Length: 334
Image (tube, rainbow, N blue to C red; front, side):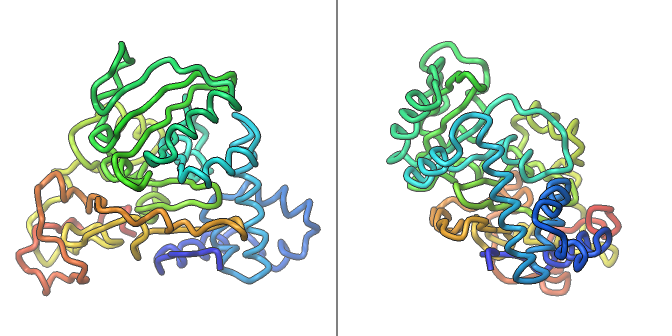
C-alpha cells in the first residue's frame, strides 16, 4: 500500500467521501481515459478513499496523484528533472503551493514556489534553479537578517530554523529556496505560523501533519507572528482558531482534543497522527525525511510554554486538571 501512515479517522472520512458521491464499481469499470477525466475533478480525500477501496483502485489513485504532481511541476520546468533533483538533494515543496495541490477544492492563486532543502543539498538545488529553470537570484537572506534590502518577509517565524534563503525570479514565476539549519529539510516547517501549512511534497509523495483539521478546512494558529499569513488562509476559506479559543477550563461538557492535537502529545512529522502517502511506486518513502530533533507544535504547546507532553493517549479522567479542553460541539470536531 502507498499509505505509509493513515490514521483511522482519515480512512473513515476518505471512504465516506468516495461512496457518498460515486458508484465505485461503475467508475472502475470505465475505460482509462474516462477514469482520468472523472478523477481529475475529485478532491484529494476522495482519491484517498479510492486508494483504500481495492488494489486496482489504489493503482488508479496513485496514477492520478502522480499525474497531478507532474502537471503541477510542468509549470516551472521539466517535471522529471525537478523530481530527480528533489530526490538527490532531499528537497521538499511546502507553503501555499503544497496547500493548493492538497486542497483540490480551492481555486486560489499562488505567487511563488517554496522549496526547502538540507544544507548538503542547498547549493546543488540553487544551481539547478539557475542553470535549468532560468532563475535569477534577486535576494539572499542569512538566517533572519537580510544581507541586502529585502521585501519584508525575512522576519517570518520559520526563519528561526533557516540557515539561509535565496529568492529567484524565473521565466515561470518566483521561487524561494530555503536551507534548513538541521540535517532535515523539514525543520523549518515545524515553526510555521499555523497547521494548514505544516505539509510537504517530496519528489514521490506527500505528508500532512494535521490531516483531519486540514480536510475539515480548520486551521490552528501556532503563535502570534505572521498575522498576514494567517489572514491569507482565512480568505482562502479556512476557519482559524486563535490560541485563546482553544483553552477552556475542563468540565463534563468538554472533551480532550482529538487527532493528536492535545498539548500532552509530542508530535513530529512521521508520527501516527500524520497522513503520509507515496504515489510513485519506485519512489523513496515519505517518512525517510522525518528523523530530526524538532517536534511539531501540539495545538499551541509552544504558545503556552507547556512542556508536559507525553506520548500516552488521554481522556478527561486521566488528566482531570488538564487545561487543553474545548467545547465538544465545535463544528470541526463533527
